[in-house]
Image (cartoon, rainbow, N blue to C red; front, top):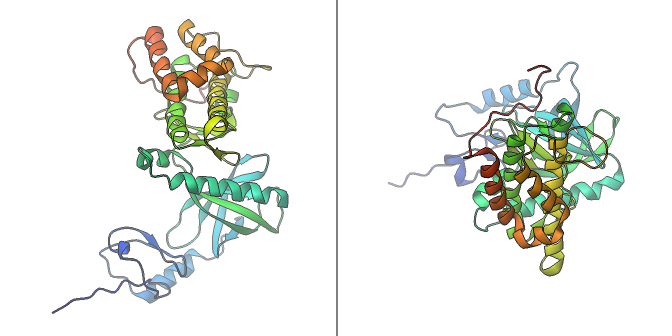
Length: 329
């Protein structure tokens, strides 16, 4: 006797993909997120719970995107082209997201281009993609968002919605502002290494970021993790155009590290008063010598960084990182 199992969405009864038998999926018809479980849930109780979850939130700012409602939790940043917000999807299965809302109609194309770049990066199938694509922003999609957003008023805005990365404290620009005397050089070694690892993967796949800065690098204090954001100017190229853009990325990464070492001083950042000579020399070389960056590449700089770090600090060891230390701590 042949036994058949029908997989249907509990909200709209549409057929679900076979993957719903072992993992969370989104219904392609109504957009509901379906989680596999052993408990039997009747459709009517599911819909009642969904109605309660979608009820109005008193005093909350609500945005609507692709038919779903999102409660704005906090502003994250204000960029050249967009307002960046932390938001949470309202519904039976809430999800926190990063919402990028275009500041004006001229910025719509910028967000759409960034979404296309991120989609292409997530679809890479080169060696290391399974690991490194998780260390890049993960787009959920684009579309017009409506509702109230701080600084934008009531109306509709183009939105890019990203999965919100958990555990990240803020950008290296925030770290720089919180540490006007500069950070411990041992932390800079780890942060630079994390950036170079991602750049080596991206460059190897033919892509370059082209807009690296402290504002475009989020930091995870637990493991000095770095998430590179702001991919709207990224390009895929070959030949001399790619080589030149790779060099620019590597030099910008070195300047970013110099900025957090130097702290909040005005003018061109130095290398930090506490930075040992081997590390300082490598930073100057990689931020000022394009030929050296072209010769070494991301992997070569990482190897040179490892050698400079060992010479300056001894064997590699992890140092706990507090991106915003208290005065006197």
